[in-house]
Image 1: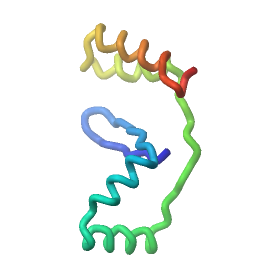
Image 2: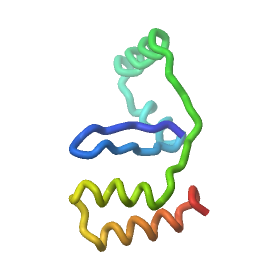
Image 3: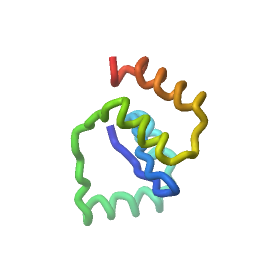
Length: 87
């Protein structure tokens, strides 16, 4: 699954399903699609297998930012535990 990293106050990685990636590409204009293909030809795309982090490690990263309330952190933990990646 492709990953995109956003750099803000916190570095975040977002997983994008291939179907979603295809939809994004389908919405590109002809000019944007041409630029994308040119870039793919000139810069190799490094693909690596997904490595899931430990839930405790993920939660501690969020807590360390001091940006999130306890209710959000609890919801995050519950959601991670129920997610298909951690089942």
